[in-house]
Figure 1 (tube, rainbow, N blue to C red):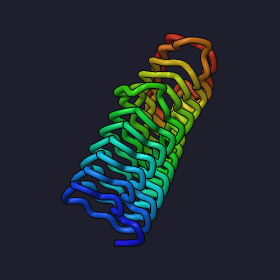
Figure 2: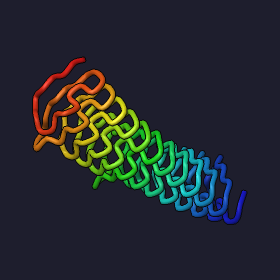
Figure 3: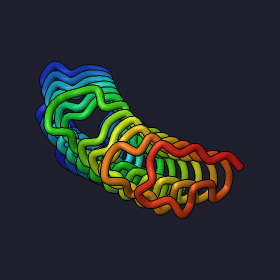
Figure 4: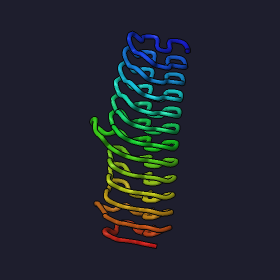
Length: 212
């Protein structure tokens, strides 16, 4: 439904396309649902994708099993599989990363690994993991949680502004309101903080445990 929706489809089956240019270049991709202008516009053979929103998964070509809900969610994705993005701009620059979850406006919005890989990042909340680029295996839940992280990996941040100052380092656990908020160590810090504002003032300290 819509101008050029599924316009190039040849043998693709069981697709639903609603909106101008939605799935316009799809040829053999099957069991996709695309609702919104330019959603899944460049898809050719990708299958089992679910898309709702203007430009959502627009650049997808062959990737499958992605869910994108919200304007520009997973917009740049081309071959990344098994991603879930809910919220405007969520996972918006990811092209090839697999198995990521972003829920919230601009969650993991700048993530873009250099090669096709299972990156397993989770960002839930407004701007959660906003700056993550090539970091992997981070779990960031809460508004602005880990929003300065870029290349750091294996971090856990749960709570508003938890670990919000750290950029490139790994192996930190921050659970609670503003835990480890100011941390920005010069290397992997291995800090653990549990409880509201636990370790909030720590900047470059390493191998600390804060509880309460």
